[in-house]
Length: 217
Image 1 (tube, helix red, strand yellow):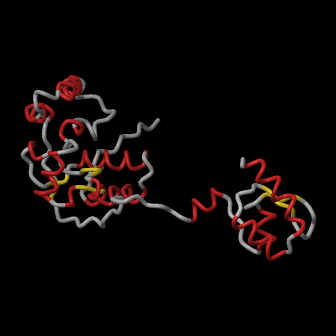
Image 2: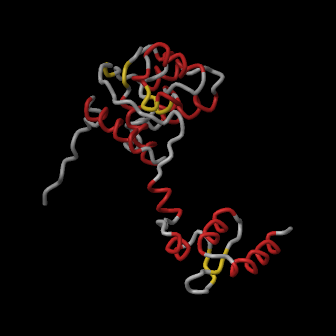
């Protein structure tokens, strides 16, 4: 039988049932609306009026999703143990030497960044795309060598704050990675990762840029 025929069948039968069998019927059937034994009106199953008759609490999908926060596996962030040293600064020219020649797109972007090295915008994260460990072997090697302290999301090998081992700087926190992780965490809605990156930013004093001089008139 189709859903329409089932709905018509139950609507014809429900007026002969008492309140308790009506409760059982609405729980077991798949009808979308049913006649209320109190008011004689048709009410939507799983709606506000239905919840009042059943004596249950009614919640919209938005409220239920807000109350029940589902977390996918691997999203747990550990509290950062600030035991790693801060990485020494490295020039973009030195970083270009460590990028494999097979990554032509990365090398091309890095060369453009070297050409406009004096620009102020994006200076705090310039060169991190080339120095960051790529997904796969580089991140697994970094995890095996330095542990989960180099990742703000270690379960997924996500948000690395240490440069790749090919850079030759070992297990050290790179401020460019910290800033990039903070920006991406804010964009992708990872509040715990953002807070962890903010703590690292303050601990390693990554935002130690000189203050702008205000011209007084």
